[in-house]
Image 1 (cartoon, rainbow, N blue to C red):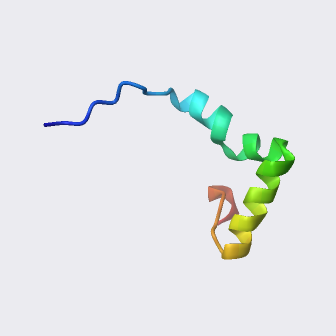
Image 2 (cartoon, rainbow, N blue to C red):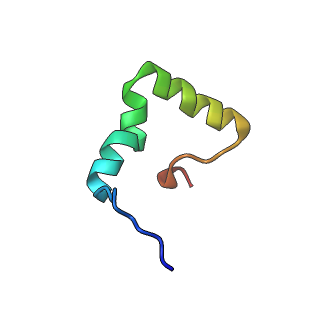
Length: 48
């Protein structure tokens, strides 16, 4: 049996609410990004 995806968001909406620029707008989001960087995670495709 296949999985049902009844709460499918559009890609645009998803990017707007949880994308890179949305994170950088808020103080808490920037803090989260810096924590991820500290661990060594690459966050942005453009950084590569």
